[in-house]
Amino acid sequence: MSGSAKRSVTITLDGSNKSSTLPLLDGTIGPQVADIRRIYGDLGIFTYDPGYGATAACESKITYIDGDQGILLYRGYPIEQLAEHSSFLEVAYLLTNGELPTPAQLRDYEMGVLRHTMLHEQLRQFYNGFRRDAHPMAVMCGVVGALSAFYHDSLDINNPEHRKISAFRLIAKMPTIAAWAHKYNSGQPFMYPRNDLGYAENFLYMFNAVPAETYKVNPILAKAMDLIMILHADHEQNASTSTVRLSGSTGANPFACIAAGIASLWGPAHGGANEAVLKMLTEIGHVRNIPEFLSEVKDKGSHTKLMGFGHRVYKNYDPRAKIIQKACHDVLGELGIKDDPLLDLALELEKIALNDKYFVDRKLYPNVDFYSGIILKAMGFPTSMFTALFAVSRTVGWISQWAEMIEDPEQRIGRPRQIYTGPTQRDYIPPGQR
Image 1 (cartoon, rainbow, N blue to C red):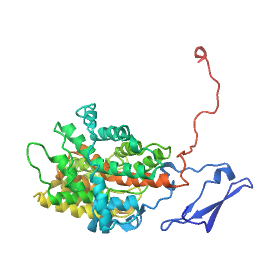
Image 2: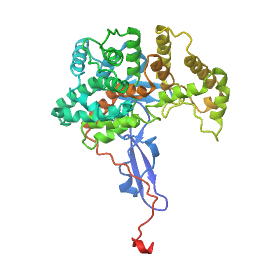
Image 3: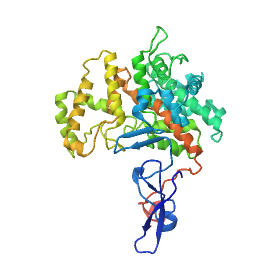
Image 4: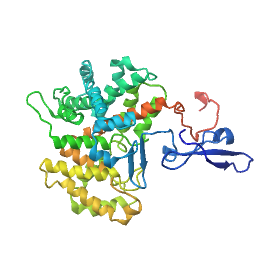
């Protein structure tokens, strides 16, 4: 562990003379962590923490979140500064390598990614195995998992060079995989990537272009897409990242681990949240319906939820939400959408909710999903692609976390314990006697 134990906490088991002294470990920032690994041996008990909300399952140097203060740092750099000054591939280098690159290092990294944007030609046929109306996330789960069958030359997870080339391949190919999932779904021809385009530009080109005519990527939209990718690149030990780490702890290859992360991200409580926000705004329909909607949200007997507000970690304004709100206006302005009903509705809903004691007391502030769905809709993405776009961005974080886990000498195969509440031991009863 990076933090030496200078303090400890002692737990005494009631009705016995047993106690356990647990070292308190310090990170560079954040709360102290009690090392509970000895508690079962000392006291014969496990700890209980559904959802792992108060449990550190690993040591990491990648991303830090202070939910109370609304702080998000990538390798120590505030997300606000990276969003303003950096590019997605520069952030990808930072997350995967630990430091911001020099200009020469960034050029080499960009070229390394661009050289791997194409998919093996046989994968074109793999898409044909899906139904035409298959959800893009179903396609991405399958295709990413299949990459290990096509790129088995670099699957030795203990080889640093293999880990590096796998990271390049995953980061580079994910936009192609996602764009082709959309093309397959819509019945349009696949568009091959172009190495003369930037990362976000390339994705927009493959997503929108058709062979019959020339397509030029709008630089404002490319910048917005790059920003969205930066904001979603990593977010500490969330459900999908924890899934990648847990899968990786078994020694599974990186393609299988990222496919597992995509499956976890698919859940509406995780990566599908921005789609849920758009659905909610559509159902509200008009600004005049907001008071009635919020009344239903407050009604404990109602199942109505305020989507896009609140966060498992943030108990303050999600810093990403402030950044993406401005980008939302830029995109709508560039596209000539002066009066967007959904944006007007979103802004009014935000204004009312932030001044409503019910939501303020519960620290329900807008999160990044509140605005990202509006931007993506304005840019022409179908709602089924929202989570797929999230997966393209988060691949950088997943592969960084996976590589860090592989290199951690203290990492063991994941094996959570449980409180067993089923029947005690009982004897088998023959069928005729039941």
